[in-house]
Length: 451
Image (cartoon, rainbow, N blue to C red; front, side, top):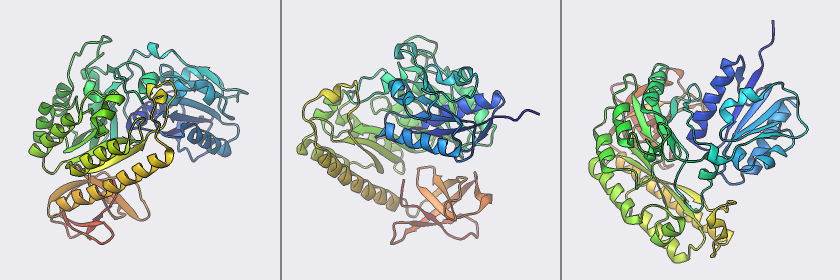
């Protein structure tokens, strides 16, 4: 009897990458491969790369070393955004055998004729203009939540961003296929689906291979809300100019969509937003937050912000800091600007010294801690629902409330992938909030102080 080959995966970056890795893994399994953990000995290691994370090349090299250490004869393949942007660079890394670009990654099993090691990585990478077709993806089996890809690519031209160069034009899955995938996920006893894409608010563009919008994001949300078997739907990052009031109002009344929004800001200075070529000014962001708070006072609102962009003076940074300090938001994801090849920002004047970027980042991270604490305090005395996840972390099981408060309680495998009504009671000295199960004589549970 022939031994089945083993394949392992490592994913860098965003939820979209996780959804695509999961789909690629299912393709391997359909071809007769057994999936194993990356820490295990495998015949093939597939690394899904990211171009957004800092030191992407350094991270990649470390992951390749881990794979080769497990099996020095293993076949190593690189796919994803960094593989599209810098294919020759990745192919030159010792141990890499295959590099696939944006259009080739979903056909990876076609490129693996034998598993012999190559002296130099073999590259199959398209011109990004050829990445004009859509491949649907979703993740199941990796986590309690599933990531459902609904859109890919981006037509925006933000001056710091390489994503259009790595993923191509904005294009969408058909509404019919999104609903089919959502139903398939719901049949796997998965309680929560997170909608993901590069620019999900642009959903509907390119749905049938053309540039027009066949459907809107609002129509997608309405249709998904009717799918049976889904307990929770969560919207991942969405641009403020594309998050319409009708969508916010619908979520506030929805059967399944949860009160959690992650809305990129990037800068609280209109001058810097213009240099970034963002498609809104800060008053639009203020209006979106105000609308959410009007209809969902308990909602969690996360913010992406970039510090140290070229031309950002101390005054510009203080504009951002004060704007965020006064805004009723829940937490920040802070990114320190780093130059990217082939982006307009990399050629701009007014380069901010690295030590200044670091200082500003530290200030905003401190503000995030303050904002999160205030948000948690606002939730004391409320009743929420928690979905517990499946990992035993140092004797604790973790989960999230519908409005994205992270909770933990002593490990109990019976809680995995279950929903429970809870009361949030008090914040301890260490920043952890205690809670109790509603109508259950269970030990009090704690909320972790991190998001």
